[in-house]
Image (cartoon, rainbow, N blue to C red; front, side, top):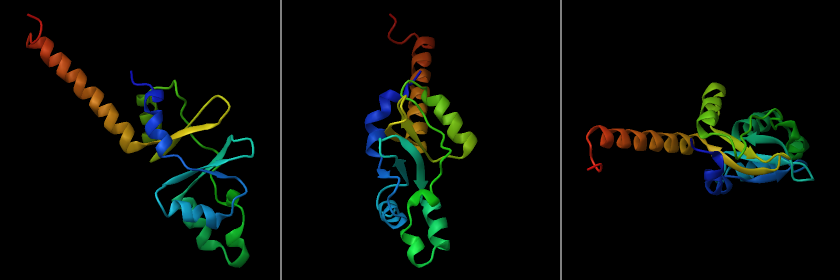
Length: 147
């Protein structure tokens, strides 16, 4: 069974945190670069929610003037599905499929963000695990390496 903690180095590279009181415009600029999702953190460093490109575009589409510089809390998603380091990668994949998620934050017991798992990475690693199991089974059946 593949545990999420094994993939934390990759997940950390995908993570970008932003303060809960940051203006939406700042968040939109970050999302315009390399990130699909921002992890929104409270002053204590705990995850308060996430902001996706879709969230930002939706809010920017209805804002006018000074409301575009309002805190991103107006646009962020608060009820967020998360993963934990000791969780299994296959369980995360099932959750991502069921909810139609492209990314999922990994948090510790105090809801401090540790990284962001991407669906492509999760699926690729699960596929590799299946391939390895098939190779082992094939070698066993063919008696390869057991002489």
